[in-house]
Length: 389
View (cartoon, rainbow, N blue to C red):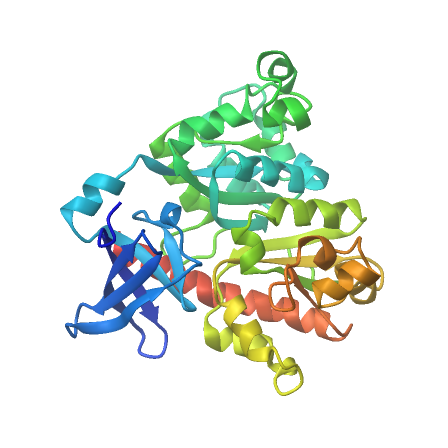
């Protein structure tokens, strides 16, 4: 690998202030992990060559969304033939639908997905109506178990995820194992259904069989037309807000954090992955401005990649959950509260694994703020996906 070897991509960013897409040529130099950007419309340099440690070689492929200095960019094409030849791959997107029987094992299943090398690019917890379930299971309409299938899939929340990886469709089906969990325990003992499933209906998770099925099913949960898809499961009562921060998501800690929360006896009543832009992050952290010295760094961290918002419920949840998160400084947490989330998964006061509501009266406000941001940001994300093809 030479010092000057570099890979080129076409990247798009949605400028919310101007309500338009801006297109850049993004250059990445693997030797030192540096990047530079050129504004393609104005034919000028936008970012001088700068080392950027938060961008990794494995993140560079068409269709991925990356973050550079708090700016979320969609990689929509290769910038030259060399990059296309060297980095072109067989990456696919597919739906991972975690069924109602996954509830208490949600963290373990997510951990298995991440450890298998998949990247979770979208995620949300929803509850399907019977009509939505009928659309989703349309190909099973003639099967004798059809009604039982509908009753089960609508019996509780499901978590829909878009996962990405090389040959994702077939690899996800292999990770799931045979549809009948009893058979899976014999034929594929390390599979998800073998570990967590009960039978052929209550079998933890679903995966499409083909590219066409994956596209159709992803459209149901993450519509490209600007719609919201099935309704989220937020209850807005007796709740508090938890945000798994970008550094923890990128470090593959999502499943472990969710497992720890559930093992402690909390209920996760809503979940969604989203991206914060700087304006939203500043508003979300407004209560800390002028109070916490690290305010600006906190904002930058929250904008640095995907977050996962959780609605947490339990009696007097804000007080109890805040204690479970631990002191904001992980070093202090490791000394005073070694079993807390920040003690175990935090790195420093900025990258301290999770945000949690500080005051009980803020819990409902922050969950509602998340819902507003999710709607706006989801619309922008879908718009970018639509324009980029």
